[in-house]
Length: 207
Image 1 (cartoon, rainbow, N blue to C red):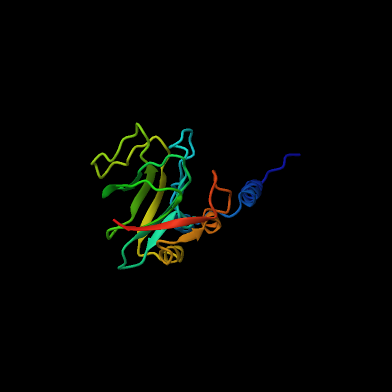
Image 2 (cartoon, rainbow, N blue to C red; image 1 turned 90 degrees about the vertical axis):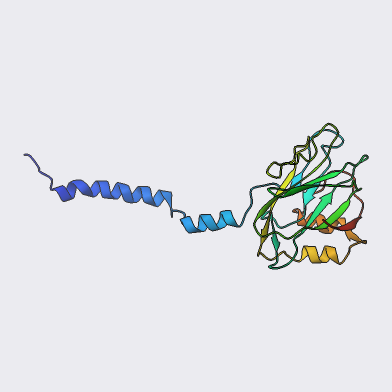
């Protein structure tokens, strides 16, 4: 006896297989949501240094949210905060605003720098590192990042976004000190490498 299957009956197993595969995959990501997440995060690194060597192992960290983006209030001068770790020998700090200019700042012991920058109208990548012996200083090319022997900290400055409360707290302590534990919590709460004092000086500068 020969059985003939209708086209509808042949397509039924194929439809069931397709439904099974979709159930295993789960909901597909929404393109708009993925784009929004990428805009709210900057894939740099808040903490630099960490390699071998007296200078290159010294911690340099950008004190900003976990998103790695420092907001700037509309119409206000940009401010950024950096944490410099303890070291037996200190070296100049190199600060580079990509596409604009580079700064070489005087060495300081373990502490915080709160820097006020010239006005910015667009998003700007910000890089910080130490000028270690044998490293290259500012090249004079505003489109090039400064090259040093230690991994730099790299973040984004975004005008038109709220800057957060930390900068105001640090500004209120210019010339004073801030608890090291408070700054450690900004960086996630993990222990900081090296021998840190309980209080750190806050140095405020306008560039």
